[in-house]
Length: 251
Image 1 (tube, rainbow, N blue to C red):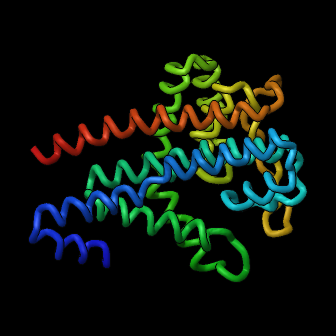
Image 2 (image 1 turned 120 degrees about the vertical axis):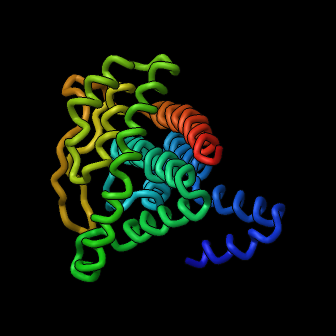
């Protein structure tokens, strides 16, 4: 509501509206920040600073990270970049294409609330359940669109596109979330790695199915960079498509 009010006030001056609207749109996207955090973790791992890498990955994931080994840190980093390609980039682009900056802000409010209280612990049981379900609804279409964009990205980057499609189709629903598995499964197939599996959340072991081939290779530090490349390509494709759709809407 506050964002809509600011946009309404700014609408009396074209240039003010353009500046504020552009800032709101920029603030809804997390491409650079997501890539930057991922590459920081990769740098710490290359320097054999596992403790620092654990702290860094703990800033961008919801699971417990203090007991992760190097491979666990790499898996967590790849998973969160893959998942947030949808949540942090493609989804806000879609909502901005539909309803402009206000649409992007509305989506980010729902997604942020889910990130803060969407876990089903005793403290946030009721509001957490509602926010998680609302986030699932908002991300249903973006997650599936991201699946397609990441498949195209794997082709353009000359990764394992056939496996990206095969694993992406087979494992896209092997996740506790109805949406997160779509992007993770494509990345797992494209890079021929295995993601998912049991994780610790707030001191409790949460069983999750594995995503990826049973014959997949061990995750390596370079896979973080490769996932960032997929993020950038998918984001560029998503921007071109959503801007094109927005232009058609305004005609």
